[in-house]
Length: 152
Image (cartoon, rainbow, N blue to C red; front, side, top):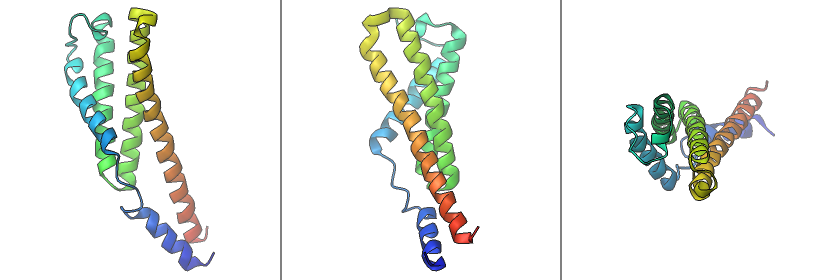
């Protein structure tokens, strides 16, 4: 491949248009997660909920991971830069682990009766970890193209 073509390809991957716009459905769910997690940060779990069955420390950890992770993922998704991709990755992993904590809490609190919420929460967690993998592949491709353009 001629050097000019490699440089053009590298430029297309670094421009904002190359990284497709974020999915509005994901942005909506991430926004909801930010607001849902805020009361949990102050260990303010509603009585009768799964969160009320957790120790206060786990409620705070869960709330922090959910709110901060979602906020980072939102900011990262809306910033069409390399730093935005990295922020989205960090946020996605945080939300994924928050889902693991909550899914485990559901399982320990109510067992098989909580199968439907466990599957929903696990699906969201898996999709967050999947998104991290997608972004990791994107960064790897961009890095490979940049090396090729530099001739390294």
